[in-house]
Image (cartoon, rainbow over all chains, first blue to last red; front, side):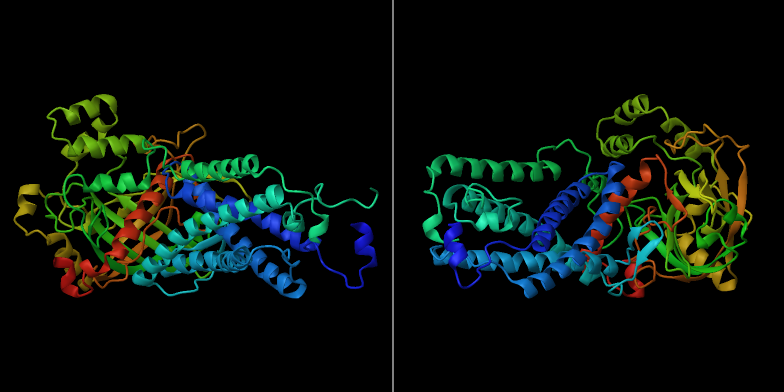
Length: 195
Length: 352
């Protein structure tokens, strides 16, 4: 395989670049933490509630910033092509789920911020550091945004589970290099140059 | 990846089992965190539902302290509080407030002469873009020591068992002090003659970074005139709202804000126990209510007086109530804003 690659005239990208991989895994941790904090905080009156809320808001803003950076990086550097033999429905699922994940990464923090603004709740990202309100006080808008934030959170988690299942499907069953494109390190699939 | 270089797929059954297991464990962890496997967990939904045990929920209204009237005014800080907290609200100056006088009842149509607990919600805004929100009541201590006890109190007071309250008092003896206050404290004919107490303990941080455990209260400038409740009953079910509107039309009502500082070793965890009387207190400013507005279309209607909305320089202590109140107030707010149409935004809406 290394020989095949060396004589190839056109350079094919097989992996996301290190910046893309770093962003992906960093955001994976942030987003999973965010979703668990979210469902946890709305179901408790223990004093941990405030701790969770005080993490949820700045972490949401951090995810928004990272997601915007990631979008720019993705538009600039693209993604490795999917395997040619991947069935069309799977390719379509891959494309659509990635669009949905990007949309949610950007929309969820914005919906949360807008929802808090519509209720005139502060978005405190650090003690004494309050973000401006992005919407005027509006109870019906608050209700709409609250519902969106709530249900999209479950959709987001479901999509992440699908994404995880698909990644493992590529890694364990198809072993077609798709997992390694974002994987933390090369697995046995790709032959190291020394071999 | 060129297909030719791919190793042959393994027997997929084992791999599929692994994938299913990973997804199932992740989903289960999520469900566990959400409390779906923990029906005994005290959720804010349960606390708010607890106010609906005795009567159907007051659609469109706050789930507790449901009857109220808005006011606007100013908080004039005298600068003395800066010794305790670097929050801008304590720097000498005038800061706009939105407030709400209310009754401690889930019934928005309650008779003013029948409700023992009167309250005041307050939101003070400062030019740095921050706010200090609070919701205070007139008793000098809270009825119960813990959030779980509050839930038990909700259940006991809605119970049809004749000895439910006696059993509750046996398990939570701190309620006796509150019962004593309810029996002996004089009733007054005006929201303007009531003291309002924060009860919960908070931590102030001064500009040198030193922390001070504090509680705060509003003391009325108007002299309280005791009126027997039988007398108040003759004044009509909304006499408090009528009285405060008439009074403030004639001139503003004022309260002095006092911040009481704990001695080293004073407990901050239990709002059912007042600190000894000799604790140092600092007069930090004056609250002035300048204008009354009906709640239905007033400025306090869609404000959540969440006691954990605090400016830099004030934070929560180990008192468990502010967190629980914040969580429950959110649920109440989410419900009532979703029921907006059940509480028309007309001046007569308040009386419906």
